[in-house]
Length: 206
Image (spheres, one colour):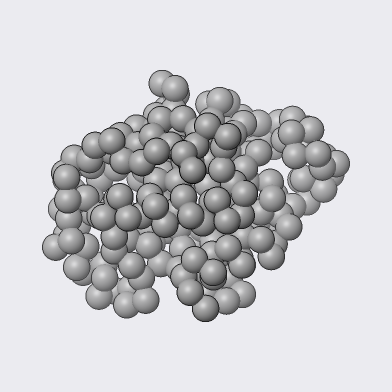
């Protein structure tokens, strides 16, 4: 099974994942999302939305039970993104790379290389990478395994931006089945995945 096939199979086999595009669009507004609002956007009963989200490991909720994180999150992580001036975060590097495709809007990504502590700044649009600092920034990603039930722990926690291929070498050794790619390549792969499962905003490039 190819890497993209393993991703698309995982995301389409679990019906709960159908909530992700609606959740990301609403969370991009920068405020907690009441579950009835997500239910209305998704066309699901509210109780089914709550059951589905509670069954996904490590989804972010606030103290009032509102959704605050599902891929895109209001809770602080290593990957800071700005969408229409709003300060948000993503669970992993590839979530940040795919965000412009899902939203159809430009996104500024700020992260830190875990190997060198160098700051990383990306300007992404629905059409692709506009700029990267450092220019040689790469993305490390591990693919989900068959039967994976906790994407955040198994995949997202291991996904990072690195200041260049050399900075990612130790990560590559620790994740022999993982992939290290330039941001441009990571964007194209992510866009293809999202297009395949229909998670592409009408404003995103084809």
